[in-house]
Image (cartoon, rainbow, N blue to C red; front, side, top):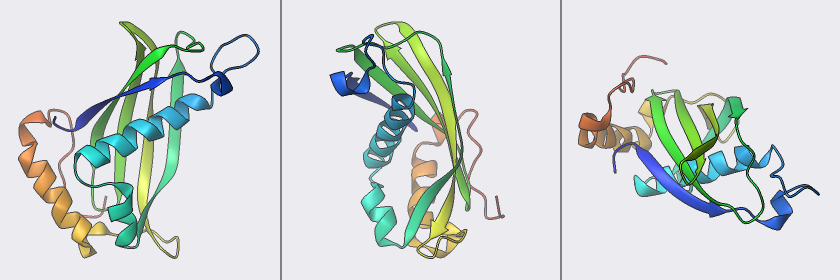
Length: 152
């Protein structure tokens, strides 16, 4: 597995408009589904992050829509970790129906503490786990900025 993940979802009726086309905001929801699965596969589910008093706040999100998804489509969400540091993380996403790219986007997150302030994860057990993951998957990290101890 590396630092990417593949998640399958089927478009539900409630996610579409009257024409049977997926409403645009659902793509961001699916990005979250992919992101949560990637963390889960890395044995870092959001529950473990939350237990340490940390959260991930989105500071930037975008989506480029290419072809509409429709009711009952079987979709694949490819989520790739692109950058991670002591203060932030960036993901890229692609959503496919079979071989057709429907949408792609990115989200940028900062680590925050329970008070909602920016957090430096070097002070948390989470940082040690991130370093282990990076070391384990370093052969899959072409293009991914490595962890560093500087603010970032």
